[in-house]
Image (cartoon, rainbow, N blue to C red; front, side, top):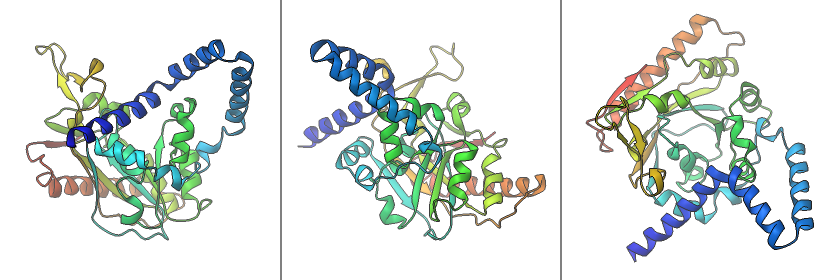
Length: 312
């Protein structure tokens, strides 16, 4: 029975992940095939309607997304997170009358911990943090992919642009919003190593300025095991930081390795309409200390006692 469960988990995880990653290629190929095998008139008409919908709906990713509890709580996501598995840990209750910025670390190769824990309800976010809505903040290009964008919008994901962040924090969507920002970005992907959790954070202060301007609490979040989903091969030392490699075709799929995402204690921020550089630097230093403390307090619990933390 266990082997059958693992097979189901693998099929669901690989299918969903592959479609979302390669939808710009899969969708045009599917349209071409269906036009040839079925009816070109019907397929092209449906494609035109969808393109019109994309144009009409083009601002939704910057205006709070399109939240769907049905989509977030769909049973397939439970199977998706069981592939690793993913676990979400709460350290403190969050007041739903405030807005939050979750600083997610580390980026890893695919940020699977962020996707599973905050883009779905499969790890029971709504139970752990009642009346808080997590919005996974992604690059605008992620919302250009056909059909994938609709899944992301339904999960509550939004564009990580400044206008989008300000829309959520300004109160236009009410209170209880949690913007989940993967702070390190692609720079962190290049720097990461399996023996060291490297966080590209010292020069990232835009989220600090937003928190001060709108009085949003900042919450450090660390996923223990995110970097371990891919091994890095240096090819006899020829590639200094190594090439990430998972399993199966070209090593694209992540390894089955537990990922535990710990949501730390919020840093409550007093609103300052026009924060100075000193205000930003002071809060930024406080956040760096909170991230380091969260790492030190939890790394041994989740099997990463040998891993060092380096903030650059």
